[in-house]
Amino acid sequence: MSTTENSMSAEYKEAITHLLFQLADDDFLYAFRGSEWLGLAPHIEEDVASSSISQDSMGHAAMFYHLLEDLGVGKADDLAHLRPAQDRNNSILTERVNGEGYYMETPQYDWAYQVVRSYFYTQAKKVKVDSLCHSSYKPVAEVAIKVKMELYYHKLHWETWFKQLMSSTDVAKKKMNDAITVVMNDFGDVFSFGNLKPKIESNNLLDSEEEMKKRWHASIGPVFEALQMEEPAIPNHPVMNGRNGEHTKDLDEALLTLSEVYKLDPVAVW
Image (cartoon, rainbow, N blue to C red; front, side, top):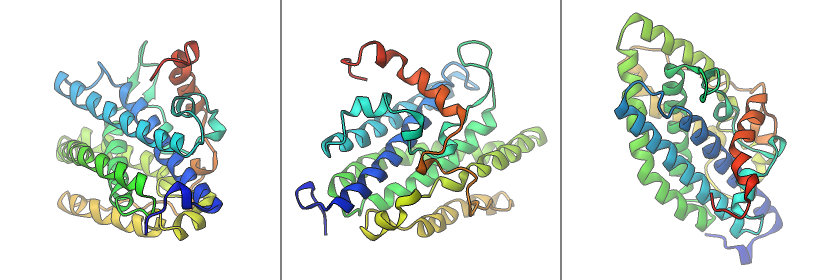
């Protein structure tokens, strides 16, 4: 049974609002970190491809923010650009820097980290989007169907990179394995719903945290088996949980850049 705003209880609205902020903030930060690779990717074709993925992801974030606007939470652009770090619900993984340095100066970014983060995140996003297609909240289900069409190509892109680098030189394999360790250290809150877990799950907005973790493992399992690698484990208890507003200084710095232009002219459309 679908739920519309007119028939929505206070608990239901709280649950869908919190979930939409998670989805929107994740893609907003993930797209930003991806955009920092513009001009720095390994070759020109990848520069174009990964930039396109970042653009798509920012578009997905915009759709989720607009659903929040439709719920009366606030103006979509304001929700994206003006909320402080402690009000954000993105996962820790999406806010992490790409490496040392600033992208406009002398960055020393880690492409292995970009590949692993993007592959694991995209697989997790696909699991969520597949589930959202059957959400009790019809507007988010309709958006999920649109997102799913683009997500297929994102997943294929990063899975191809992952396989190629893990089948390459010893140096490449070491960098990839090191990146897997770093990414998984931050993966504990990716499938978390935070403090509103009971309300989100009981209102059938999408599948449970536990079920989606199982599906994520099932989706990457064949790749790891083919590469003769041990599948990484998702931490049971994240050190920090971005779903509850716990964040690193990386997020503060990212938001300064993301909101700089918007604050100059809040009337403009981002």
